[in-house]
Image 1 (cartoon, rainbow, N blue to C red):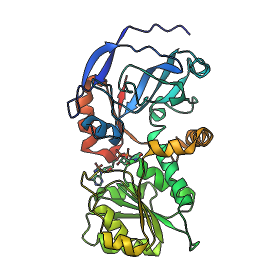
Image 2: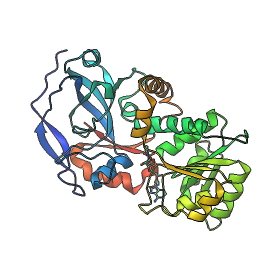
Image 3: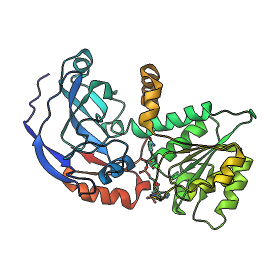
Length: 338
Ligand SMILES: NC(=O)c1ccc[n+]([C@@H]2O[C@H](COP(=O)([O-])OP(=O)(O)OC[C@H]3O[C@@H](n4cnc5c(N)ncnc54)[C@H](OP(=O)(O)O)[C@@H]3O)[C@@H](O)[C@H]2O)c1
């Protein structure tokens, strides 16, 4: 494949945690054994990127660093190995290596195993968001099936921050699988947003009667599998509302507050609480299961696992891009375009 690759490139660079990310000109990296060089097309801003910028994420890298955990692009150079050569010239969804610079640059080196070629039916924009949220949505339904259900009755799911891209995927997968999903949002306007996308059960946590309404609905729908992205006082509210012997999976900390859990209620109810991190879940799955899940995602990326896009920005407008995203996250993803 003949592509002229420059020696330097534009990249968003973070010099220390909490600093303002800025555009810099840095050398184009070279792929090593088992690695590929991807000419980046798009990369979204996700809540995990915001946490990484602040220095509070589960993956830390030495500074200066290029952020961005997922994206799409074209493989333009291959390091040694069969897989890198196989991917050469292909459009791929790519995840950043935990040890190397990330996706917010014109070029990125990552392992060939962190890239997935996708068909022409998938746009470069949707392809850039093929990993994090779609894989998490599949993981949640896998956890749902594996969570013990001694009564054998149909169980519902409760999910918070439900106007999110992930929340909307959970609603669509729930519908597809006949599993009732209670979506908890925090703004009135998000109720109609979700109802318009086909959600049946939506509650607003800012309503004065939220606790009572959630309890009624959770018991009616036997909603004992709970996914919480908010934390703070929300976690205990969910456990108090759900039937006994529920399982709470904490997967986000959007409130920024420490989770409040009443130990007494935990002791006497048979409830279970655990954290969820996609990185750990993927390690537990193994290669074959992950490949099958990637196939599943590709078949649903334009339907159940689609992500709405709000706006696109150039890398030099990174500050405006972050501001636009954090100002109204439910409006859709903000993408960096390279
Ligand atoms: N643990 C994992 O492995 C994993 C994997 C994937 C995703 N996640 C988590 O899943 C969540 C959703 O991700 P996403 O990419 O789908 O998000 P997203 O599309 O960017 O949407 C975020 C949503 O959260 C709402 N929100 C923000 N702060 C909130 C708060 N304090 N209380 C309640 N709602 C709040 C936003 O509402 P506004 O529109 O009003 O801002 C928006 O609806 C995030 O917490 C993310 O970190 C975790």
